Length: 354
Image: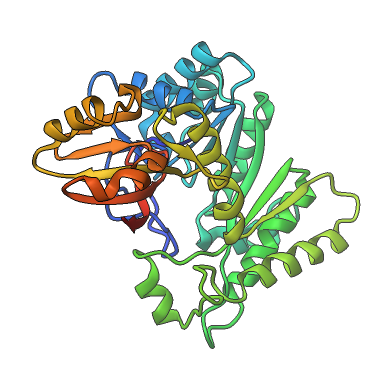
């Protein structure tokens, strides 16, 4: 389960992909479901049950800026699903080390640090002669990383492969190398390198920098190549480092991560009148009419359709699609087959009129 615990963040990364409804706003989303109110924790638990989540990734914004809320939900997830429910947390800021002890005490298994991009090149000064340079911005992250390791958390870094701006030198690529090299030198457990993605919110800045997208995707051209080449350079320089490097492509997130979550959720929430597809979406028949209750009685009384294959929502009658295809011509109103995500918002992805 992806849990956006807050949209508030101390940083303002130009590549942040968060939507307007989340970025900078103190809101909570469990997957696609916005949760709020005094029972927000139970709403999160319900969403986890709906997909039989084996773990939760807590992100934002920065979860460490909503520490009490973060601690509360970690503890509740562990109480509900047990110690095997893996919880990791993604943080972009620096904070007091006492906060690490609190999240560890609540049951957190893993923490992923995303240092501010302006500090990446400074990581080359850490662990070597202090006279070489002054890692002023990198030092707080370094101290937190080692404190997290000391108290027994699984610790890694997670950053995007930010390509250099057109004609803008090598600032970002050199920073990525310095950060990954630091991780290898210090034996940090893992580094996740994400292919840089465009979104509605960061696209204007990407266009200004001269970034181009790969085909019809939202992946930024050159990001995957930068991730792979930098990882290889670091491996060559640090052949005995225990650090594991992962590269996550933009397409993987949709084709694998999202699809698998949809499939798990569809298996749990599909109603008798819905058909699960191999991609995890749901097919349902829809009749739209201002006389939805009258149509419901006709379906039950005249067509003898079992009540569990019908559901009325305001001016919409949901019905098994295989039945609607047979009787559509005998009914009034707008009729179609709807393909939707099995998520809280029920996003419709395709509609086939009958």
